[in-house]
Image (tube, rainbow, N blue to C red):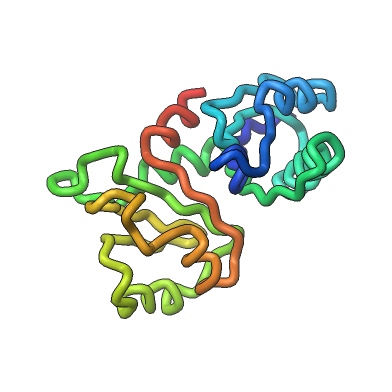
Length: 177
């Protein structure tokens, strides 16, 4: 049985570092038996179909990237139904948190104790509205993400997990891919 997945590569094609040509990766994935492979923008977003489970898919893709691009890349895999749930269950205030470019979902490599995430509320540098949910943190960057101290690196360092983030517009496009 084929499963439909969304794959989010962490830290590729950002600032000229960790260059992974998405069209080349797409071709490599197709050559390795993955079906209906699509990429969205150049920052490491893919959808595809395969019979692998999430762990097998993660191992296969990281292996293909290591072998062909000589890069060790972390990634987060979500089933299309999980992606649909991320969008459907969003906690953003429909009155005050409406700008999709300021809505971000941080996907964590594992669920983290809510108390650890709640401790971010005590950090003076964290001024954003955020909503933890299992292995996700929904964040509304009301002062724009580029000015925030609440970065992916900060989150990873504090929670001791791998994380990657996508804005709301990207998640919507990925759901519809």
